[in-house]
Image (tube, rainbow, N blue to C red; front, side, top):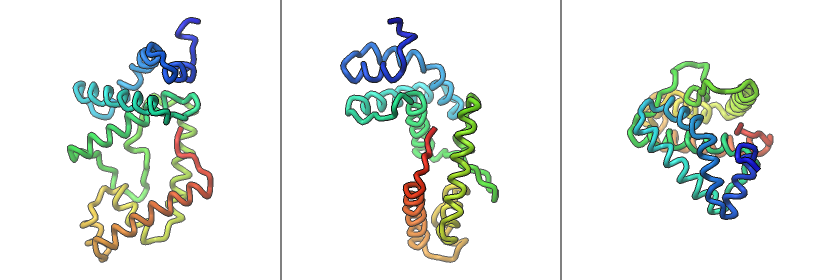
Length: 194
Protein backbone atom coordinates (compact mmCIF):
# COMPACT_ATOMS: atom_id res chain seq x y z
CA UNK A 1 0.00 0.00 0.00
CA UNK A 2 1.31 3.48 -0.87
CA UNK A 3 2.32 5.48 2.20
CA UNK A 4 0.07 8.44 1.32
CA UNK A 5 -2.96 6.16 1.61
CA UNK A 6 -2.12 4.86 5.08
CA UNK A 7 -4.01 6.70 7.83
CA UNK A 8 -2.23 8.40 10.74
CA UNK A 9 -3.80 5.88 13.12
CA UNK A 10 -2.31 2.94 11.19
CA UNK A 11 1.09 4.66 10.99
CA UNK A 12 1.05 5.30 14.76
CA UNK A 13 0.10 1.68 15.39
CA UNK A 14 2.85 0.45 13.03
CA UNK A 15 5.41 2.68 14.76
CA UNK A 16 4.38 1.44 18.22
CA UNK A 17 4.82 -2.11 16.88
CA UNK A 18 8.40 -1.40 15.82
CA UNK A 19 8.18 0.08 12.30
CA UNK A 20 10.47 3.12 12.63
CA UNK A 21 9.72 4.18 9.03
CA UNK A 22 6.10 4.95 9.98
CA UNK A 23 7.24 7.80 12.23
CA UNK A 24 9.24 9.31 9.34
CA UNK A 25 6.09 9.23 7.20
CA UNK A 26 4.08 10.96 9.98
CA UNK A 27 6.74 13.65 10.44
CA UNK A 28 7.00 14.26 6.70
CA UNK A 29 3.20 14.37 6.36
CA UNK A 30 2.64 16.95 9.11
CA UNK A 31 5.95 18.83 9.27
CA UNK A 32 4.79 21.91 7.36
CA UNK A 33 1.62 22.41 9.40
CA UNK A 34 3.31 21.91 12.78
CA UNK A 35 6.37 23.97 11.83
CA UNK A 36 4.19 26.84 10.55
CA UNK A 37 2.05 26.71 13.69
CA UNK A 38 5.12 26.96 15.96
CA UNK A 39 6.68 29.73 13.85
CA UNK A 40 3.41 31.72 13.94
CA UNK A 41 3.75 31.86 17.74
CA UNK A 42 7.50 32.43 18.25
CA UNK A 43 8.56 34.25 15.03
CA UNK A 44 12.09 32.86 15.20
CA UNK A 45 13.48 30.05 12.99
CA UNK A 46 15.97 28.70 15.56
CA UNK A 47 13.39 28.58 18.34
CA UNK A 48 10.89 27.03 15.93
CA UNK A 49 13.43 24.29 15.08
CA UNK A 50 14.05 23.61 18.79
CA UNK A 51 10.36 23.46 19.67
CA UNK A 52 9.66 21.28 16.61
CA UNK A 53 12.37 18.81 17.64
CA UNK A 54 11.21 18.84 21.29
CA UNK A 55 7.66 18.18 20.10
CA UNK A 56 8.68 15.03 18.28
CA UNK A 57 10.93 13.89 21.12
CA UNK A 58 7.86 14.09 23.35
CA UNK A 59 5.71 12.35 20.71
CA UNK A 60 8.24 9.51 20.48
CA UNK A 61 8.51 9.16 24.27
CA UNK A 62 4.73 9.07 24.67
CA UNK A 63 4.30 6.50 21.89
CA UNK A 64 7.14 4.32 23.23
CA UNK A 65 5.61 4.39 26.72
CA UNK A 66 2.29 3.25 25.25
CA UNK A 67 0.50 6.33 26.59
CA UNK A 68 -0.99 7.45 23.28
CA UNK A 69 -4.76 7.03 23.12
CA UNK A 70 -6.00 9.80 20.84
CA UNK A 71 -7.92 7.47 18.52
CA UNK A 72 -6.53 8.60 15.19
CA UNK A 73 -6.25 12.29 16.09
CA UNK A 74 -2.47 12.39 15.68
CA UNK A 75 -2.17 15.91 14.24
CA UNK A 76 -4.34 17.75 16.84
CA UNK A 77 -2.59 15.77 19.61
CA UNK A 78 0.86 16.72 18.26
CA UNK A 79 -0.26 20.36 17.88
CA UNK A 80 -1.31 20.37 21.56
CA UNK A 81 2.15 19.09 22.54
CA UNK A 82 3.76 21.82 20.41
CA UNK A 83 1.46 24.44 21.93
CA UNK A 84 2.35 23.34 25.48
CA UNK A 85 6.06 23.49 24.64
CA UNK A 86 5.60 27.01 23.22
CA UNK A 87 3.95 28.07 26.49
CA UNK A 88 6.86 26.49 28.42
CA UNK A 89 9.30 28.43 26.23
CA UNK A 90 7.56 31.74 26.93
CA UNK A 91 7.31 30.98 30.67
CA UNK A 92 11.02 30.14 30.94
CA UNK A 93 11.99 33.42 29.34
CA UNK A 94 9.19 35.30 31.06
CA UNK A 95 7.98 36.22 27.59
CA UNK A 96 4.44 34.98 27.98
CA UNK A 97 2.13 36.90 25.65
CA UNK A 98 -0.26 38.93 27.75
CA UNK A 99 -4.00 38.75 27.46
CA UNK A 100 -6.05 41.77 26.61
CA UNK A 101 -7.18 43.44 29.82
CA UNK A 102 -10.90 43.42 29.03
CA UNK A 103 -14.04 42.09 30.65
CA UNK A 104 -14.68 40.09 27.48
CA UNK A 105 -11.97 37.45 27.93
CA UNK A 106 -11.01 34.96 25.24
CA UNK A 107 -9.16 31.82 26.29
CA UNK A 108 -8.15 31.32 22.65
CA UNK A 109 -6.33 34.63 22.29
CA UNK A 110 -3.01 32.78 22.62
CA UNK A 111 -4.18 29.73 20.70
CA UNK A 112 -5.28 31.41 17.51
CA UNK A 113 -4.33 29.54 14.37
CA UNK A 114 -5.40 31.02 11.04
CA UNK A 115 -5.47 27.61 9.39
CA UNK A 116 -8.50 26.39 11.33
CA UNK A 117 -11.02 24.62 9.19
CA UNK A 118 -14.73 25.43 9.46
CA UNK A 119 -15.24 22.31 11.58
CA UNK A 120 -12.38 23.22 13.90
CA UNK A 121 -13.76 26.75 14.23
CA UNK A 122 -17.15 25.39 15.28
CA UNK A 123 -15.50 23.05 17.80
CA UNK A 124 -13.29 25.87 19.09
CA UNK A 125 -16.33 28.12 19.55
CA UNK A 126 -18.16 25.36 21.42
CA UNK A 127 -15.17 24.79 23.74
CA UNK A 128 -14.95 28.56 24.27
CA UNK A 129 -18.65 28.67 25.15
CA UNK A 130 -18.32 25.68 27.51
CA UNK A 131 -15.33 27.21 29.31
CA UNK A 132 -17.11 30.56 29.66
CA UNK A 133 -20.13 28.83 31.24
CA UNK A 134 -17.91 26.83 33.61
CA UNK A 135 -16.00 29.93 34.74
CA UNK A 136 -19.33 31.70 35.33
CA UNK A 137 -20.40 28.85 37.66
CA UNK A 138 -17.44 29.39 39.99
CA UNK A 139 -17.97 31.27 43.26
CA UNK A 140 -17.29 35.00 42.78
CA UNK A 141 -14.03 35.08 44.79
CA UNK A 142 -12.58 32.13 42.83
CA UNK A 143 -13.74 33.46 39.46
CA UNK A 144 -12.22 36.87 40.24
CA UNK A 145 -8.77 35.42 41.09
CA UNK A 146 -8.85 33.03 38.10
CA UNK A 147 -9.64 35.85 35.66
CA UNK A 148 -7.00 38.17 37.12
CA UNK A 149 -4.31 35.47 37.08
CA UNK A 150 -4.99 33.77 33.75
CA UNK A 151 -6.74 36.36 31.63
CA UNK A 152 -5.12 39.54 32.93
CA UNK A 153 -1.71 37.94 33.64
CA UNK A 154 -1.53 39.50 37.12
CA UNK A 155 0.87 38.18 39.76
CA UNK A 156 -0.53 36.84 43.03
CA UNK A 157 1.03 39.87 44.74
CA UNK A 158 -0.95 42.19 42.43
CA UNK A 159 -4.13 40.12 42.95
CA UNK A 160 -3.58 40.34 46.71
CA UNK A 161 -3.29 44.15 46.54
CA UNK A 162 -6.35 44.58 44.30
CA UNK A 163 -8.62 42.21 46.25
CA UNK A 164 -7.35 43.12 49.70
CA UNK A 165 -6.64 39.51 50.72
CA UNK A 166 -3.33 37.83 51.56
CA UNK A 167 -1.24 36.19 48.86
CA UNK A 168 -1.96 32.80 50.48
CA UNK A 169 -5.71 33.43 50.29
CA UNK A 170 -5.39 34.40 46.61
CA UNK A 171 -3.35 31.23 45.96
CA UNK A 172 -5.97 29.16 47.78
CA UNK A 173 -8.80 30.68 45.76
CA UNK A 174 -6.94 29.95 42.53
CA UNK A 175 -6.34 26.37 43.62
CA UNK A 176 -10.01 25.86 44.48
CA UNK A 177 -11.08 27.53 41.21
CA UNK A 178 -9.02 24.98 39.26
CA UNK A 179 -10.27 22.07 41.38
CA UNK A 180 -13.86 23.20 40.87
CA UNK A 181 -13.34 23.66 37.12
CA UNK A 182 -12.03 20.09 36.89
CA UNK A 183 -15.07 18.83 38.85
CA UNK A 184 -17.45 20.74 36.59
CA UNK A 185 -15.73 19.42 33.46
CA UNK A 186 -16.08 15.85 34.77
CA UNK A 187 -19.67 16.29 36.00
CA UNK A 188 -20.84 17.83 32.75
CA UNK A 189 -18.75 15.45 30.67
CA UNK A 190 -17.26 18.34 28.68
CA UNK A 191 -14.49 17.65 26.18
CA UNK A 192 -12.01 20.51 25.91
CA UNK A 193 -9.94 19.20 23.01
CA UNK A 194 -10.48 19.41 19.27
